[in-house]
Length: 250
Image 1 (spheres, helix red, strand yellow):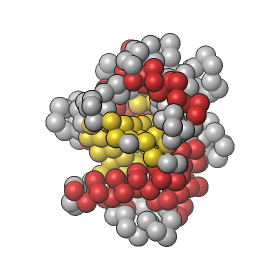
Image 2 (cartoon, helix red, strand yellow):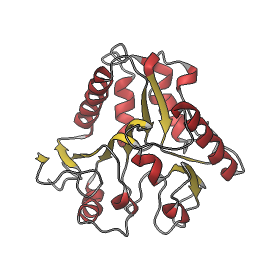
Image 3 (cartoon, helix red, strand yellow):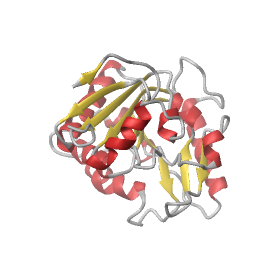
């Protein structure tokens, strides 16, 4: 079903679509990407990727025989919404997951893939990634009407976090930096993340949510409970929630 009683530019008022299962979600998202890229003609298309098992199905689909030849990879630039400060070979690495599920299966240019750097000095790593984003954007200031990202993919944690914007962490108050980091109190590893202002510079933010464990937190976010980080996601474009039936409480 599609909830069109409310629509807007934030997580609390965006569109909601409930699909039967994770495979249907993946197909729907792949088609959105192809359609959006087609509408942008021959211009560069930037996506900020999310970690997690649900978007992994999307990446596997894009790397499959069904889709890999339909994507204009030369125009697609892939970024990351967040990353754990672990080696790229670590099982906890988002970059490893994306590499194994997508990158090794497609003909994408090396320079079009932008992993978050992993350093002992996570503040320095965040600064380096911010510079990479600014180089691609062509400016050090995000301008209204000129979004950095075409699509930002986000997940939803049972604690209300998204990307690595965790509850009760200083990064939630960041207004100027494009990229920052946090050390969650209830999750392992230091983590780099895009900040709220950077996520806001997008044409389309898509929350991809699956599983019965997400029913309660999704309801709280939609009820505009600002104590949960996901509730405070905004964009100058559109927000879509793509849920499976379990997450939608059906």
